[in-house]
Image 1: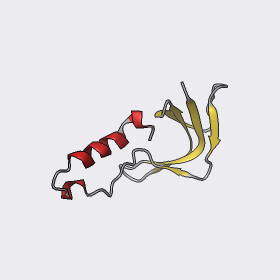
Image 2: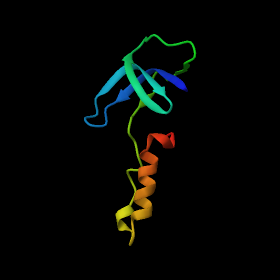
Image 3: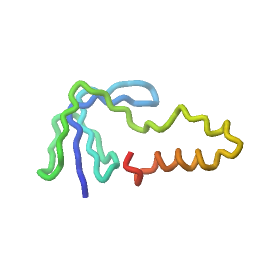
Image 4: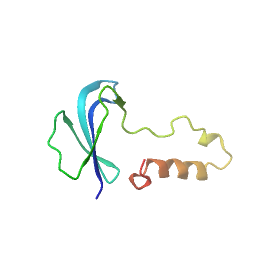
Length: 90
C-alpha cells in the first residue's frame, strides 16, 4: 500500500468554489482517503509533501473534450472513463 499526505493544501470544492484552507489530504493507493485540518497525525511510512499555499481541486477530468462531436464517440468516451477511474492513478 502506498500512502502520501499533501500537507497545508487549500482545497477547492468544485461544486460551489469554496476553499478549505490549510488542509491535509491523505491519498492511499492513488485515491483520496481523507481530508483533515492541518496538522494531522501521520503514520511513519506515509510520505509527506508540503503543498502549503497551493490549491487542490479534486475530480478534474478532461472537461474540454469534444467527444460528442465525433461520428462515433465510443472511443473518446471510453478514454474519458479510463482517466476518471481510480485504477488509472490520476
